Length: 231
Image 1 (cartoon, rainbow, N blue to C red):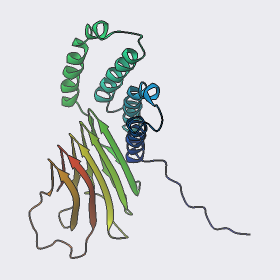
Image 2: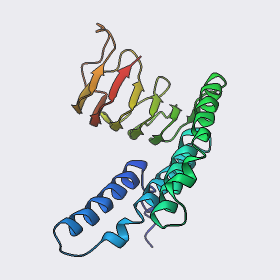
Image 3: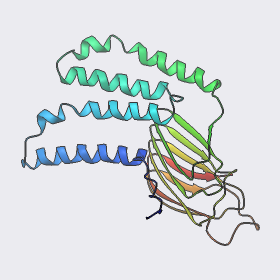
Image 4: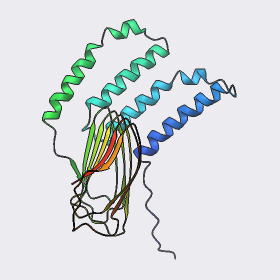
């Protein structure tokens, strides 16, 4: 009898979902522009991709980050109604003050934010769209994370975490947003993030007590945003 335990299978991460949606959109556009296959009818449903992204952001945040994803779902849903000729732009634009109300609610909610969610998972995943997401990881066997911020911000706090198999790897994608990783002061972090009209930096001052071996490698991509490491 084979008692070997089956490996744990992770659910698709936020970056996998987001990347898959972008790839799908690109494939549809390429098929249409190269005249390989007419996809204009399928492109009519592109707004649904943004609705899915908004719903996913709600689920990923445990319904703690509400205003931003809801705005994305509402705007994309309205766009979809127009694309399907169920409504006109003129009819929907009457309700534009709703966005002003949502912005006000986000400002108010920001003043009463609850503490970041704590987790002891060895691998973490954060996704924020038109809003923010925070996580405090306390795992003693931390191995990595993926962080995705689209017109929003994510923050991963690792000050209470530890690493047994170095280096841990964090992949961060920030588009018109920011991703911040907070680490213990003595950790040695290697940055390998491609920044296009953005910034990727380790904002901590140099310390003599910093580990010689690399503790964390931060990779990824940022455009019109930033990826930072702080303590």
